[in-house]
Length: 358
Image: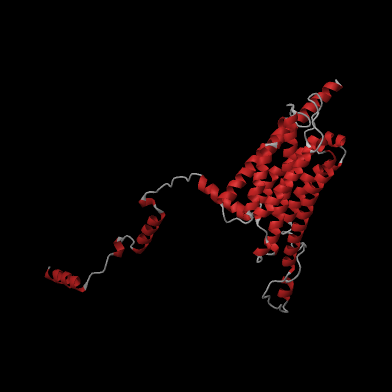
């Protein structure tokens, strides 16, 4: 009975994990595809090059390593075994696309830092093509480290096709340092500086402030509110969300890279899919939370949806026509019997002569 209960609980946990993984896959494809269309159809967006690059990386991951995590055998969620060549390809894709994503997020954070802190110094910003070329060069080098790891095991044994479970060999600490630690430091420095600039602007008094009067009403109006607020608290929301999402998604994966291979293999499926949730979270965090992206998405949605036909009302029942008729009735009311018009003097003389003649 205990074995049957244990097997059923394991199967239930596997089914729930598979359903959640499918939802993450669908969210990553739909979210990044929609954001990419919005960015390409709206040329005036700031940081459009970095946003488009992040969407492309997420879509590549959703089309390659995420289906492998769904279908492949251990350490994935499926039961399809991989041959040695497919195993090496899976290692290379994982070791290259994950750093491309994290370094792309760091590049986007640095671009927003330069745009906010130094808006009037466009010469200090490097070209986006140069930055992203460096990102992909670093990702290719980190992916090449997976080819230097131990060869995959024969098919009866677990192939160990992932980065965590022996795919990088002795290069795992170096890969974790360059793929996770370096982007985390760059992101923290960029968004920390943005928060400090926003808080300093919130603490600065507005220009042209008037002097206070000595009346009691003015003194009461200048009293502090009962609910104290942190200056710059609203500006801290976006940096806190960006840094918190990066830490929640990638910190467990980076820590597992530094753990022994046997312990990392035991928790590989859970840690990997926690990291894959970043691909589905990026469109909402870096897209929908930005006001220009929301306005552009709303405009494109209104253009795409068919407009309902206009129902034309009859002219007699039009509100303006009815109002004009009501105003006309007020100016020219119907005449009653007691409101007969006065006769003119000529007509009055004629009537009096007729009465005398009779």
